[in-house]
Length: 303
Image (cartoon, rainbow, N blue to C red; front, side, top):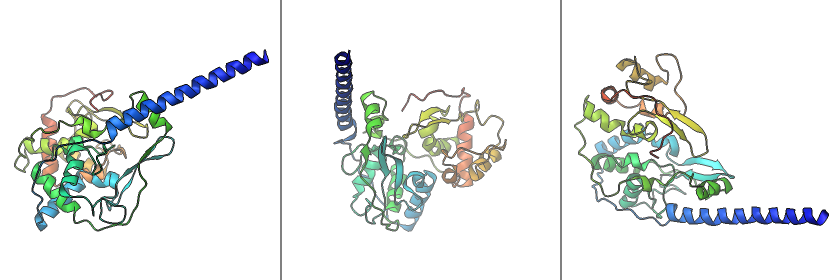
């Protein structure tokens, strides 16, 4: 009996060890294929250096919530900091020690923001380039102009590392895809609508909302990088905003409190989006009100 139990134990150990080896091999292949040694076309765009362009770029960086991930001084933070899952920093964007600002050429900024590929050809994780891909050349140029002027901050972050749980997700095909795989590289962008309180300009501004609320703005449930389930609400007239007024909408984004007294989720970067101008928020409101009324989205499948 003792020998039989021992043989069963050895067999079970061998199976577990084999499974671990297979997970390691499969995850390494998937990681290398999807997240390393990537290439992306780089559009040649003009990067202005005027004071007005830098100011415009700062506004874009604020309202497109760059600081939500990279920190208020853009010196970097962590998207995930759990050894069992992964260590995924949001890079220091400044020219200080540990930052990419000193080494990044214009094409590096363009590749990262518009195409989701880092200066070292890594597929960026958590960087919503599929949304920033829609920025006009003028706005992207202004954003880069601003990023090149931010004060240097020394903040050396560790290299990204994946843990056993992330490896298991990779092996099972459940890991978040790199942004570069979600972008139609090489496609042209429509001209930026003339700024103003119009549905067309509101649609352009609201593209940043699609990262969470989906391309149809009906919302849905997503899983964050650290595994938390988060529901983005339906922003069409058939959802959360039903019965709201324009003033309610602006107040909610400025204060974080809905007309019904509910506080907006911390996952919603309202403190940044709410810094749009009154006219910008009115334009976004017009666009959202022009959408067909839809039911609340369920699980997001467009990621």
